[in-house]
Image (cartoon, rainbow, N blue to C red):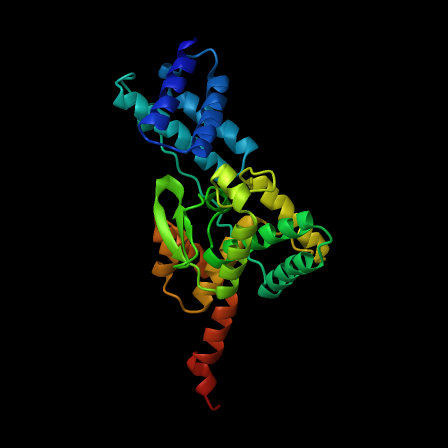
Length: 306
């Protein structure tokens, strides 16, 4: 095997075995590092210079959005830190360059609450009017998925990875495994959501036991993120909703609603599983309705008599 490929392979094995990174992260690392390998051919990756890095970064900026460029640079930086750690290189080329660029702040897109209500209503209508047991069970699973997404603000990847024992319907909690293998427990605070989850679990008992994941399809296999996206598109169409809804928008809406209800941002950070409060603070830019209420009712100008 060519040396550069060998070094990348060893690093990815280190990430998997020593750092215990998940499959999704490993796959992203592999894509980013193979892209760099193809760019520098035929140079040995250990002979990478600051000039090569700068040329690669310029190439990335021409092709990708700043957020993607930032991730690819982070993947590469971690690789060269590994080379330093293993003493495979005498000089880390990142030590000779400054990687700083302004990443635009993209405000999270939320779903108006009346649209979420209409969305859920069309799913429950499908359960009631289903002509076959197959259709009814599918709609019930879909209701359980959307209810849990909105009730907990969890990521779609976290929802699809829930094991059968991660949801305790008796004490109304869900154990979530987030980024970096961090665990958090979130309370499900609505009885209607619990009732839907109980009905789903009873109806899908055989399929759940077959795959050992909480959310299973009728073939007894774990549901995929893509299937959830297709499901959301289907009900958006049925409900004549023009807004393009993604699974992550339920998380954004969840966080924004809590902030507008005066929930301490530190509690929201913990519920969402953010490692830094800085990440959670993005939602403070979204709550325009709360801002309007504050400036309308709290600003001293309303008490002036001129």
